[in-house]
Image (cartoon, one colour):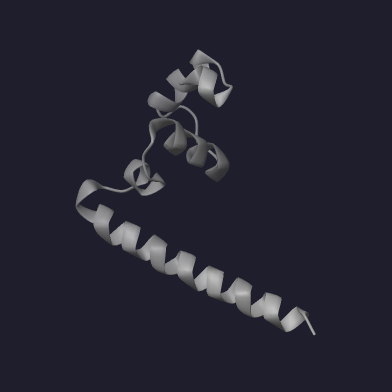
Length: 75
């Protein structure tokens, strides 16, 4: 995993021991490396479905806002 992420084994060890915090970008890379959704890494399992639904809803809202803003700049 360290090789895939381009980090040292020590860094991975520190993450496992909660001695380091991840940036959102690094968290996304770890999720991709593990082939899981980010929500699976940060949410308690009993809240996972709700978290995924909330993330999907937020993603849709952001996409709609982006499309709206793009439409307003053309013309």
